[in-house]
Amino acid sequence: MSAMPTNYSNDPVFLRHDLMIEIGRIDMALEEFRERVAANEQAQVLESLRKRRATLNDALTRLAV
Image (cartoon, rainbow, N blue to C red; front, side, top):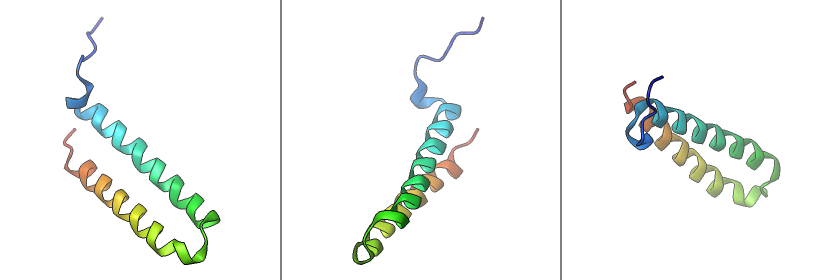
C-alpha cells in the first residue's frame, strides 16, 4: 500500500485537479451569469469572471504534470 502525500498543496496532480475544478466553477458562474444578471451589470461581472478564468488557465498551463 503506497503512502498518501501529506502535503497536497505541492503535488502537481492535486494542484491540476484543484485548478480544473475551479475552472469548472467559473464556467458554471458564467452560464448562470448570462441567465440572471441584469444587462447594465453584465459587462463588469463578465470581465471579472473572464479575468479569473484566464488566471486559472495560465496557472494550469504552467503546472507540469
